Image 1: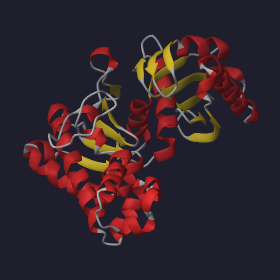
Image 2: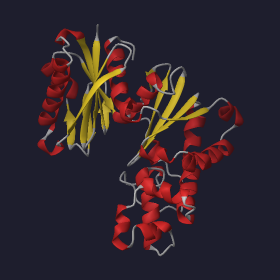
Image 3: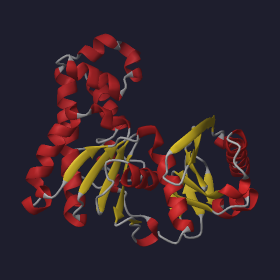
Length: 324
């Protein structure tokens, strides 16, 4: 029997999973990334994690067929190089060659959001659809597109950065990309929290101000905003409605451009559910031609913590087989 390993590499943690031929997660391990110690250290840690999983499951090295890694930043999946990842402090790191030589199996690397979307398309609610558009709403916002099992990259492997579409001329918050008014400064977990904190600092009345008085407002999370929404808090309802509306507007551009069959929404902010999805759907529906809307299905992501691991392993298996 053959096995595959999927690795979800982040700035804080590394999650490493062992999967079977059907891409079922058999076992996982998690360790801190310790990115400050450098890429050689991190890649060696990943290698040891992989070897430990194989040893503990009594799997012979020859049964491991490929390893896939999803990592943040700009990735060249053809060369297997992490071109730049700010939170890892990596520049031009030859991940595939270096880790492949260490493990003795093919190693494939791609962007972490694309790997998450690929996982949702292979084993999540996107399964069975030919054209899947997936987004993640976390610290930032990004997207991936899977067409007939193939990832769409665009020029320079830069397709999918939907979070950097400017959607609101009234929004003056600078984005990390250098622009102002980017979608991800609003439609993300951090964007939701920022809006609430700024409103509280400006003196807006809210139950959140009672829960987090004064400087404690810095501790407000997107989950707290959802909880306040359920208490009928006017500020939280306004923020969710505004965020959902602009998210729907931004998605209307992607839906019109790519005409997906399924839209998958994941990431921490997606846990807001209908609080966010209802205004998003309303804005999206009235912003696209009915032909796009009528063929579109919208699903929350279901793989959550396993999406990146499953997507990375499936990507590696299919790359090794020459499918993607």
